[in-house]
Image 1 (cartoon, one colour):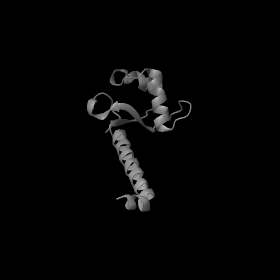
Image 2 (tube, helix red, strand yellow):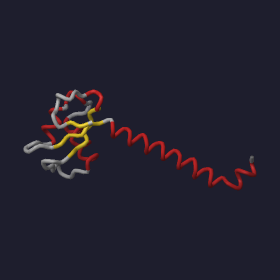
Image 3 (spheres, helix red, strand yellow):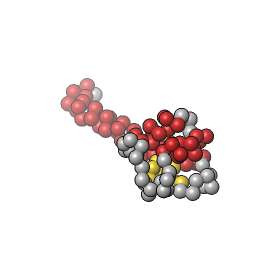
Image 4 (cartoon, one colour):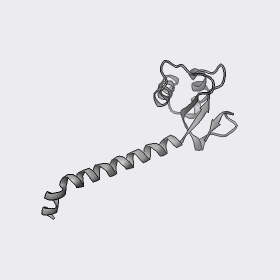
Length: 104
């Protein structure tokens, strides 16, 4: 076993690290699917969306907006009608009647 480790230690470490990274990446992809997507309508703002979902998440409105900006690549709270944003509300816990533009 020692000789096997001496000859192939780098390959085994690389394999282990690759496996760990693939598991982490898969978990992150599944985590994004747990959130809902909202399509922005005319006149909507991130503040309005934050107020609408205040009871659905454990973030303050400022934290909510920061999370949405970071996860959706938004700079300076600029959104336009038709944008689709992932928001930190778990898809399983929202009812379809809460917001018309929420998609699973």
